[in-house]
Each structure stands twice: as structure tokens, then as C-alpha cells.
Length: 499
Image (cartoon, rainbow, N blue to C red; front, side):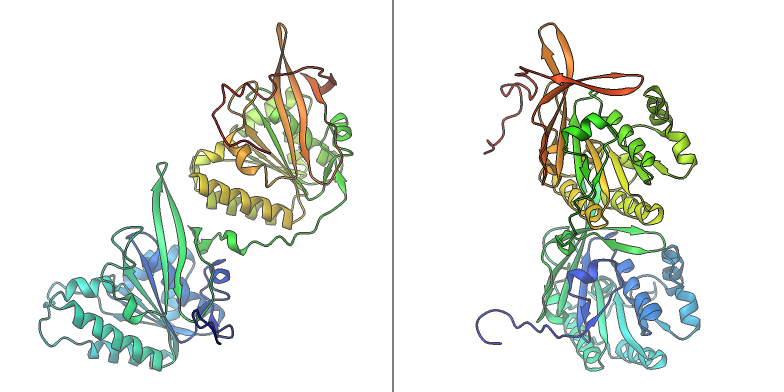
């Protein structure tokens, strides 16, 4: 390859890690026969990542592995990681996995002077031959440096010798190392520049009183990879699951089929209903009727023979069923007949990546034709701005890819107008936006509805008054004058002007 820039080898053979969605970030997996350093602070998931790499090779690629441990005993590793569904003990007994226990003992002496790891290398190569290994993990090299502190340069030299020997043997090697902070030097002892062809960073950053885990491919010599951090989580029975935005593609089909909103008058305003694979945002202040629209949307789908899923993050099942009953809708009966599934969770119960994976799992399990999320604002408060937007992009992309109609609610910040943070983030990601506002007219405060946006369709531009009673929502006449529907700009937070 001529010209400036790093040499890129698109045909480099890959080794899948088994970390869901991570392999997409590295174009199919880690380069075969090369060394990767995985760095992270304590508790970031380094040992889980390394073990998952070995487990996938054994269970799915028929590639035996060797685990060299400098920190925990093999028995502790087998016990601590049993919850992820990996039968480490069974693989060890079957000759598919070998442990090399290099963890320090209290009686070990600090080595000064002629230090080398020849004996360790011999043990590792013997274990490789014994099980026919293709993959090797060394976890964690920080213990090696901390124990043999006399001459760090000698330790780096010996690590380079081990790395070179394993590379010459055609082995794919993964080394884990400690970091002092989430952002800064790649590893505490700065040995990666001597041994690593690739560097992966795991982070566990505290924000808004919650931890946010991310994974980043910092370096991959001679090979393409996706840049930037991707959120991930750790799940029982699955291990590490990444949620990379960069793996998403705008490849979903666009359907011209319409589905009902559950309200005939609103369908007429929308030009015949929502599109089959569209995402609609309903934004309004508290009490404007967002959950009522959700209820009608679910009931309309069930009446049309569709399956519907409701994800509730603000009210309990009992509250949702009671409120729906006051509008003449029996959600409990719909769920009993199998046409509706209602799942209510506290937003703080888990991270946004966990919520996303929960929703994806429910969609795969239940197979809904439509889904409602009430509300996005409840989820927005548990994550930083970038994390929330990542969640929204991943959620809407997944829904569209599966051609599911979606209705999401967001709470606006003032009674008569103003945008919610959720609305600002999701407005460009949605196909339709319905605004519910309190309309101040003379001595009364009424409710108003407006379709602000409906991509690919003609729709009413009117602001319609509506009333709520025991039969639900009833749209009235168009409002002739409503200067405060969108709020008083002087009272809202300043922001960039839109064109």
C-alpha cells in the first residue's frame, strides 16, 4: 500500500472474542496470532473480558485455551466467574482449558538482579502443548510488576520475550493490565508499547451517582477498527455485552402501511394513522394526557389484532390498569388474553444499556407489532447527556429495524410550553412529534394538541382543543389564537435559534 498513513491489512485473519457486539468494532474480532492488552481500573471487567475470550474459543471455535493467572488462584477464578455460564472446571477436566498458577505466595522473595521469566515461559508453553491451545490469557500483569519491583525495565524486557515467543508459536494472546485512572496513561506500568499489537480500554466512570461502563479500541496495529467509546454491561449467563452505536446502519425498510393511533380523530389528523415502522414522540407537561394517548394506542393495536408491549418507567402496573379503566380501557384483560405485555421498572434499577437489552429481549421474546415507552424523561435522569442520546439512537434503530411501530412519551419542563431534554434529544430521531399543551384562553386553561412533525406524510397543522372524560380523549375545534402554546421564550432557558 503506497502513500502516507498506517499499513492496513483488510484480509488479516480474525479471532472472535465472544463479547457481543464488540467484534463488530474490530471488524470481526482480534487479529489472530497477535497480542492484545486490555487495560482498566479495578472492577472494570478485565478478567471477565479475558475469560469470555477463552470461553468463546473453547465453546464455539474448538480452540483450547491457557489461562495464566498472576493474581487469583484458579479455584477462585472458576468460582467467581461461574455466574456467567462458563464451565471452566468442566473444560479443565476435559483437557480444553489449562491454568498456569503464577499468583504470588507470602513466602515468595522479591527478585533483585538477574531476573527472568524463563521458567514461567516454559510452564506456559508446556500447558499450550498439553491442551493444544490456540489462545492464551495473562491476567493481570500489574501483579508481576508490583511483586518484582527491583528493576521494572527487566520486567518489561522479559514480558517482551514472552510475548515474542507466544507470537512465534502462532498463539493469540490477551494480557490484562491495571490503570491508575479512567483517562490517562494506558497502563500503570507502561509496558503496552513493548508488547501490544492492539490495546483495548475498559472504563467504569462514575456519573450522576451511577457507574457507566464503556469499551474503547485504542489501537490495532495494521488493522481497521471503530474509534470512540461504546457502552457495555455485564449480564449473568452472557458476560460482557457491548452496545456500540457505530455498528448501527441506516438500513431498515420504510413501510407505507398505516396503523391506528387508537383514536379515529387523531388518525385523521395524521393522514390515516402512523406508519408501520415509525417512532412517534408525544411530548407534554404533566397531566396533559400522554399516558391516555399511550393507552389508546395500545388498545387500538390490540383491537386491530396486533400484539402490544408497554414499557412503563413512571407508574406501576396497578396504577396503569386503574387509570386505563377510568377511560374505559381494560388493559388487564388484554394482557390476560396474551395480546398485551406490560412491564414496569424503576429507571434506577439498572443502567441504560441494561434497560436497552431488557427491551430488546422482550421484543424478541414477545414479538410485538407495536411498543410504547412511558416515559423517556424518567430514563433521561439516570444518565449523562451523551449516554442518554446513545440509548435513544440504539433503541429507535432497533425498533425500526424490526419494523415495529413505537410511541414514546416525554415530559416538557413547563405547563404551557418549552422543550424537555428528552424531546430535544429524540426529536431528530423520530418520524412524528405530537405536542400536548395547556392552552391559556381568557379565564380558562384548556388542553391543546398539535402534530408538529410527521415525516413522509401530510398532516393537520391545526392546534386542536381536546377534552378527557370516562370514554377517553375527544378532539374539538381548532384553536384560533394560542400565543402561549409553546411557552414564553423569555421564561424558557436560552438556546440556539432554529432555522
